[in-house]
Image 1 (tube, helix red, strand yellow):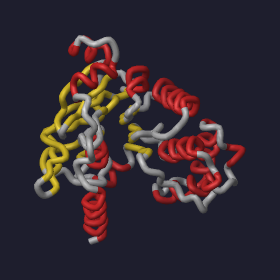
Image 2: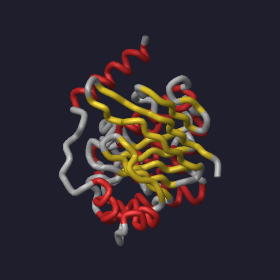
Image 3: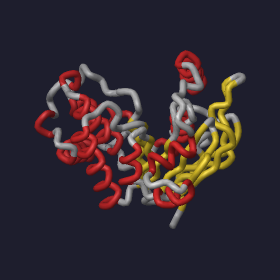
Image 4: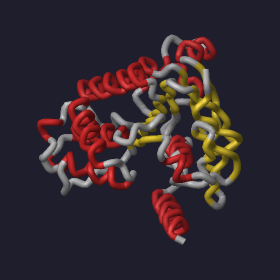
Length: 267
């Protein structure tokens, strides 16, 4: 299979803290790839580097052969992303949120309208297209965020804790959508989750990161065999331990880094 994501000896350091420590892995085109780890392990930092929000301290990241650091605009057209934190405008309608995204990506207006209708129907929100997003439930917002992330026909969809806080029925509905996209459109899916049963059910391959390092890679079955355990949750705990984790990087440091990146991009 052809490689679409390549992470080569990538590190990210904040002063004395090493959030990501020399990791390397790859993802194949059309693969559903689970990226798992405890809080503060480096998952979100890795996604932010892959999606141009952070620069790596060292190493190289490629999306379909495009250098994420040196070809940012080109790289951004390759992926869509659903962030861990809500990022919709609650004072706009569902349709208006998609219109805004289409404008940011300079999509043709006619095609953007067609695509918006297609995606809102896919995620079963077409009947609520003119409703303010602030009136939506958490599950409806997640579905709209997925539709927005798909608007510009990305080759890769990044999902950072997409089902966090959702009920079991809504989580199942979202994964059904994602599985359909992968199967019918060949879209590559890169996701993080703390619901290990989700990862075991949907991921073709999994990488586990802990303390900024990749500690295991393979299919769920291979990870179970490697640890001599009966399911992915037990394999995960065997590899990462059972202690409760704190975030490695403070939120204030993370915010300062994001502000610095925005200011650098403006200069």
